Length: 329
Image (cartoon, rainbow, N blue to C red; front, side, top):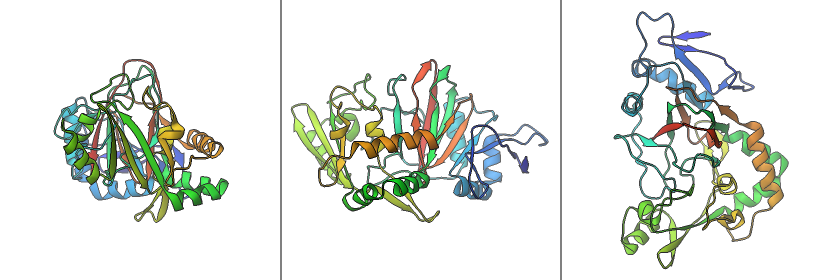
């Protein structure tokens, strides 16, 4: 256990160890030898350069055991990081409720449904670089948040299916989704077009979609949203690694509703051709094999590098569960 000012770094069961000896995620507790109870906001401010370095090396940091209880407390933690706010506005498909200046509910998809692996807003022209999650109410059973290093997925897929990766590199991906007019709370992708583009006016929605690199095809009050072709991978300059930066897995990960029930149509190659199912199945298995499944405890705060780490949500088997989120540029 290595002490760093107000933090104690602990090696636990919910971690993987890289060849370089770095743990994923890094897990930090309050330093038990501190002269007074440790506030997470104070600890972050006092150790910011070290935390930035740790996040750079690990990709994820779990803060556990700190007195963080409410959305307001969590907002203060995010503010203490010094990271600029990224507003979850037009373009996002997840249903969220804004609670404070910088805090939203996590995706309000029905809790018994799986949310597949993804980088936040990987389909968009702008995406957050950092993500914070906070456990306000820990899950009764199930509902784990799973995380996986994106460069590991890229390297393993490139090793096993180089022709598929080459096709993804050359063609990119197109994403298709049909949206209702308003919110569908029964759907994991239930944000309607009015909420997605933050307007009741179809012409304004089209203008905003165009700015976001999206095309709209109207079908009465419903609309087909076409995104792409978009790159399948990105190069992480900080890590000097290519990352698996796309929404392929979430489209195949049971994130469906009555209007979007065929994953083979939801995501296709940039030339419109369908993806090979065997390779996609291997990808989904690889995510399960390589991920770390985090068992939430009340008060946990998780910080992710959005370019380096994909995340998912397992179905909740026994309620309650309430996870909050914040996004940073």
